[in-house]
Length: 83
Image (cartoon, rainbow, N blue to C red):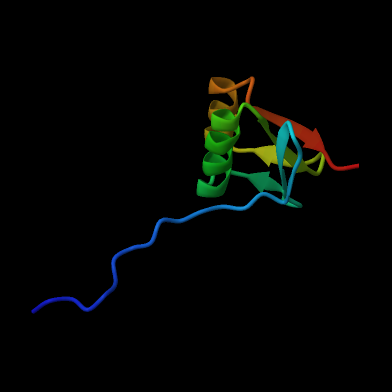
C-alpha cells in the first residue's frame, strides 16, 4: 500500500529584523537552545557576510549546544541584551 502523504517541504526561517550588516533574532526567553531557526539564520548570516545578533534578556541562559555553535563561529553570532 502506498502512502498518500505529500513529500516534505523545505523549512525556512525568518528573522525579526534585518539590516545591511546583521540578522536579528529577538527572543524573550529564560533559556535559548541552538534550534533549527538559530542554526539556519546563522548559516544565512555567514553566507551573506553578515552577523546573527541574538537579542535576549540579560538573564537568558544559553544552552551548551548554542554556546558551542557561537564558539565555532565567533565572527558570525553574537549576543545583545534587551534594554
